[in-house]
Length: 561
Image (cartoon, rainbow, N blue to C red):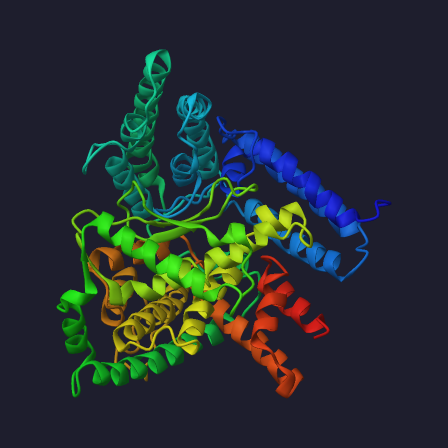
């Protein structure tokens, strides 16, 4: 390559070409120009996208970086696209269906991100809804083609996604998400008619697709939900951006969970002297000063805490550019369970957002449980990391800013950020601290459960909790274990275990990612000694953008502090 900055040039061109082939990716990345479109989800569409990846991967490998910044960009690009191609070649990309993530969830989720004010915005919504039946028909073709090649998800996961779609489309639950969306708009005349017609067609297409998953594909699905060591290792490597020893990580998960369990017992004694953890939790859950009733009241509580935290963090502990200081807290239109973050658009006209998908029937919210979640999803967690990355056009190419997301790096940082907030004095209240410990315990427990279930490992005979010693992990035991170690509503816990079974390797990326972040920080601290500056470490680490944890560790080691 002869371009002065060949790596950046290839990456920038790739963004434009990838956005045109995958408008859903463009929507999540905040790239304008494909606002009413959906991708080709047929086998041919998938093949076209992976061929783009193969070519871009070859081009970047052949390029010569001109400086350290471009070297980091090259290593990040090669690691990400290389794994994307591996996953496609293994049949995972075109066959994996889960209750948490995939083309179906993305197709519904991008509707939440679309502007709704004005005729142009509403016409884009109408056009995207109109494209849903064709896209789902193409996706059905892809899943059947993959099944014919021997690649199909577990039958139970497919059945559960069918149930999820029933809730979305009004077949079960409160309402129809698609009709509710268009009903909330102020469109008039022919545009209003188009919106309603296309929403009904989209809802009907989703309902039909759900029945296809449950009635036609599920009987062909795997009976065993475990994916096995080889597939799991590949998925785990994708989510971490690093290769780890799975057996050592499994053993470490047990140790980390025991450490956190001991700390929870000590914290319980601070809440109510002499109490058990469960007794302390009962005290917290019945404290009216720690309860918020109703979804909208809870959303306001999240927003107030988020705004206050941003104001206190800015220019003190972190350099936070002005556009990054805006974060919206919203209730998701779904009721699937869980909380998630979506980043800002390229021009920040769409801000970063924290979404809460509240299961039906949940009306009371305990703030002691969720204070640390706001830090995780907002500042200094996902929003600080993601929105600041988007802002740094001066040092990161467009692919790094908008298209690169590595779960182990991002979720690892967000979990690291929770602990950091305790170090900075924001979790001095023992209830809020218990909430953080419980979240950390959940993440440690799922290192054990996720690896254990998918590799069908033996539960250690000498495990510190006396939990079914010597037995082999099953999904039922995974659910029992999570119930024993998480202070959450059972609806959340059931969803969590379903998520692990359908999305192998993702759940451990939080805790293992945090482990690698802490190791990298300690490496720098040892090298610098008394000169170590925590704020400078955070600034330099975040300025690398999102990247796999192996490239991240290498880049950190090369920084001249």
